[in-house]
Length: 385
Image 1 (tube, rainbow, N blue to C red):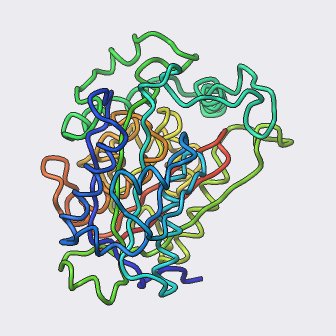
Image 2 (image 1 turned 180 degrees about the horizontal axis):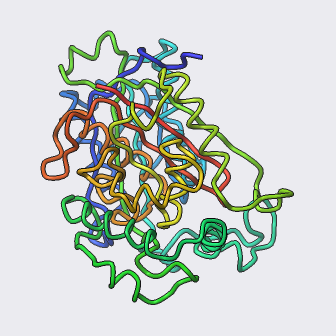
């Protein structure tokens, strides 16, 4: 299964500053991200033949992007797939280019939610999939159950989780476009107010506004735009039932959706040993326990060894396999439609060697990963220089 391998390249990316962007409209953020991507690619808006848009909140996402950018009368498709929305929009755009339908396409994801009365994404009255909302459905509670199960099975405490927060806050302090740009200590994380035990304030990602964009073209013409284009080597997507925790035997130790999506992407990219072949990764750290489970689900380490992966410093900027080099969701927050493309933006820049003080040495192959729903879906993208 080769998929898009060796057919599609990224020639431009853009990202606005994430945060409480009360001073910006959704149009402003879309324009910031898109025009940075266009400038990066050496293109103009008139060069774009089609666009894909990701947003969780707004049903009129395609029209909003058309209005913001004045992209009149070209195909624009909206993609919504929970937290995988941005990467799924990117996936569909890659397929269109690989199929030969278009040569130059735009993918843009955005979310403007800090202005809402809920200060976050609204929840449907009957919950997702028509199920009544239960207290246990709240994300901090669901992932807290994963953490307590992990603690019980492997005999650890909150310290490895706290080390994830310390690492990501350090990386975020080096990233000008991150929402949160300050370091924290292990003691601050462990002594912070609890949200859902064992997850404290610094174990949880925040809510932010943001937008990110990418411009994709056929690999054979990518060099006409830039010499340091980045190739898309593999894309995997896995979607499961609406409520995984209702499955018999579900034990919260890892997420099958991530593992399946990763195996799809690895097969396409020809990767047999992710720990050795992946040079850097952006993963979905909605909570600190999630990042630890991601290490295992992505086969960076064996089951039950994710806590050692952070404890031994393997995922730091100086480690063997740096993870969340820009601070991740922990420091960018999670504007759902933009998150996956923000990860692509970071990996793209890392593989070009353009990340300044957070640059990973000799980065040639990078991974981006999202996990969403309850969770019930995951997308994994492999990029290469």
